[in-house]
Length: 400
Image (cartoon, rainbow, N blue to C red; front, side):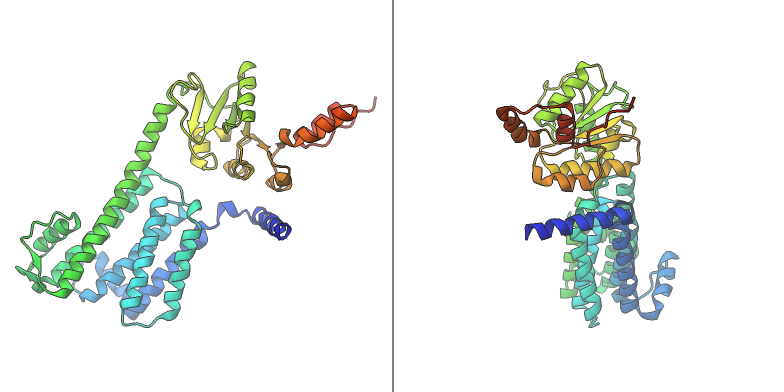
């Protein structure tokens, strides 16, 4: 069973290399599926006049039935988040999940029995959840754009929803200014109590505004503030090494014994080295060392470490699969850096080779064979070390 699984993974990796999947999969297919789902939802709930409703909404005309507003905003939100998925935005992925779930609720409670579209959104939700690792970008500009879009759409929903249900409140809401005031008070969960929903429909509407308001504000604030805080913390952590020019240097990734010894030997020879660690080192542990903290397989973190301008990137973590992912990420940067991948388990050697690093170093694989040779009195040659340690073919002597 294990052999079959390994063969399947190897075949999948070959297909991925042939199709250059890191450049377009899964963000482009998911964005297209999300956009098609949005158009299908608009067509189902609004009929053939959905383009007409969009035009009136864009022109600032909101004099249509209250039942039109939720599917219209959900559809617009899905279309907007489809653009965000193309940018691999984490916030767009989160909001796409929320809106897809809202679309499912709308289909479940609506008058249309669209079983095919319901199944479509269920599968779309599953696909989004399965691809969460591919949406990790946290650009402040993109996050701010989608956060403002989400807040604006929620504000439109809350304002015009309360305006259309104005007679169901006490006192009644009779103008847009009062509706905007009630929407802001409810979205922010302040709740002064001067306007109260009096009917079950108005109460359910108020509950939806409160739940959506908390979700949107919490997600938006986290998405906008988290990248700024993270970058500030990284600048504080890396302030001692920030003077080094990260160009034509070596990036040593990991905190294994092999990574530490390689860094020390390169530094002893006067070569510029940047350490890339997943966790922040203890204070004073790496004083005077150029250190970057973050996910080694994240493209933004690798760019921060200067991997795209490095002489070589050495993936020397304890987990062989992480080393293979780092090699793939470095190749995606399309720089000129050589890649070195460490292999700690002999059974992983073939799979690590599939990602085609420039050098595969397997020092631990050598131990048993070297000990057996020494105890047997066999000669240890330079060709043997070159082939076994670095997993390269021995160099044939030149003919004089």
